Image (cartoon, rainbow, N blue to C red; front, side, top):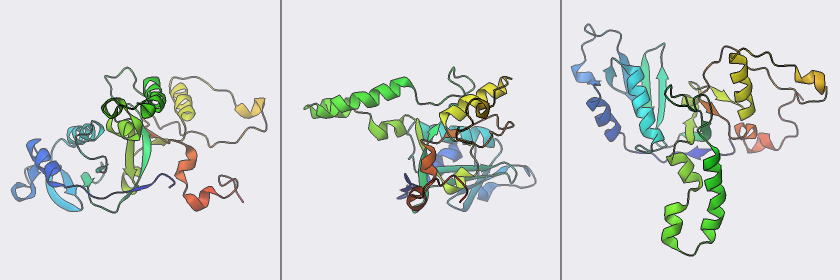
Length: 234
């Protein structure tokens, strides 16, 4: 993809220690007969232990990443059917950035992008901060791309994690999906404008979107992006 990023690797030991403190049973102490339905926990492909409350563990580790307590390179994959929770911290994985959608049940912004007008305004203010001559003032106030990542507005997702998330193509699709779930019947746009660009219909059962594309063209690589009308049959 155009905005892809190759991971350089981060230590996995702190994450394993953290999960042990959060009631993860290490493999040496695991008794299958006592908890046969426990979820297996893998770190970089190595089975390190099991956990009886995987939903809580996944949400806890995910919140650590979005609050910049662990590296943004760490990838979390939960396979509910196989009862597996995989964590990847190794180098050489190809990731790409996506906007995060707020799915916190307690949040008033639930179902919307974590990105707000305040974040956009701060990015606009960065232009004036760059022109500032005071280095300390620049470091304290500058937001930039790293600020978006550290505040959980943007998240890097690798190929394996991408299989377990729901990605909206545009913020407009997110709004249309919200209206459909609310029970509104939306008019067919082709009736008003027969020349309007044809878009794939949204999947009605998809109630929870987790991420949104920064721009639909970011799905493509360099070679595919220079093809005229790459989203049409040729």
